[in-house]
Length: 184
Image (cartoon, rainbow, N blue to C red; front, side, top):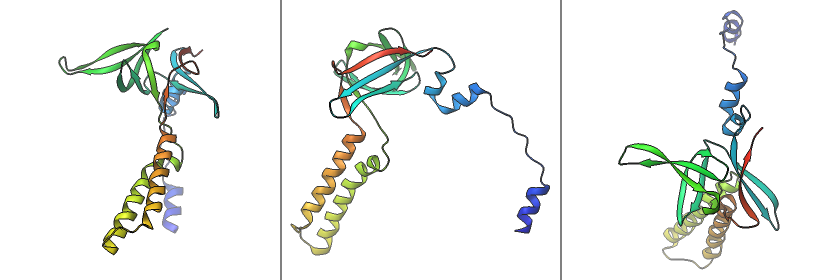
């Protein structure tokens, strides 16, 4: 104890460089980086009948997961213009990334990945727990008990429900619109 107090009082303070406002905002993420300079971003406005209105924002550098032209894409948002947006796709022939542009009206679905505390983790763990519970009962008894099936089914169904709540896929239509907005 004495040694710890002695070394903290006698040891010289380490010099630290202070970060500028721009460096702090860059460290925070892409949504904070947009505060530095005016830029465009994708806004997905969702108007649920029960949940109300919610706006999801996708800035340059964010990962966007969507379905367009009957294909799913999960790539980094590269550029946003007035009515289009671009993502970087790997071109294996040229061995580099090339931008691919999509019109807003071509997007059919947007897949969201929300991190809801405990619910997102339960979406993965509950089906596993149900499977382990059923397997352990089968190994212990040598046969499948009917008393175990409701518990296992409830765990699996609740896990599927929690996964669906954490990772919804929303169809773009008149109530759920994809737009381009600007920061100022």
